[in-house]
Image (cartoon, rainbow, N blue to C red):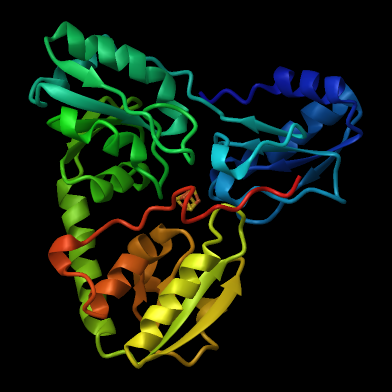
Length: 336
Ligand code: SF4
């Protein structure tokens, strides 16, 4: 169902003259790692190194230098602002599914002007969906995001700039994909309705209820953190999540309110990696979804940066903002 472009990878290895390659796959695709390793080594003779670390996005592109000649990164598109390395091949693993014409009747109640969004796996369905909508008299808009986004209409879990680009033109957004993770980024990032069309099940749903449920949890975390006197400000060492300068700004802000702040850098943010620190709350400058989606796993409130500003009284709840990672607040580039 997902295209792994194995013969393209074989050709790329041969053309590059590589004798060793590292394979980096997200958690859901690691089950294919040994099969891909066999395929590539049998056809090219290349030595294959499977990267065993967790991988959730192109934001944690593995630094293969000294371990392999090149890297094949599966399941994500490049993040343009991270720079280009010709020894890294992105295999986006796009879905080969099409739109089922009989199923699009479920779209009959969506508004007239629609912004189209998708996760990388279903990006090829955007033109088809635009034609379907336009055949019913609707207008489809596809926004170009900032330099963290590779393709028009694409959404990352930390960046909905493709939606913001057409926000004033549309009544609502239609996201093509599975799961809640990516459409929630759009639902948090823009104050308009976000519908999700799942191309596998042909079901349509509205993200409003899920978004509101998570926002209620965020409100509770903010209220609890108002009693905090000490904060651990977390910086992630991954190239596409490292917002060290933002962490420094946050630390100055906390201290200006007479509270204690400590800066800690880590690779993976987990309950285990935080349990040793004696603080009242965490501020996460890494992937914002760790705080927003997984906060129940932590023994103290975990806040995003805009949430901290609410805790400190520098922002109001009515002005709640999704903590996006952008090229300006995460200017790091992959070591080439
Ligand atoms: S920072 Fe989080 S949401 Fe953004 S690309 Fe990385 S894993 Fe995905």
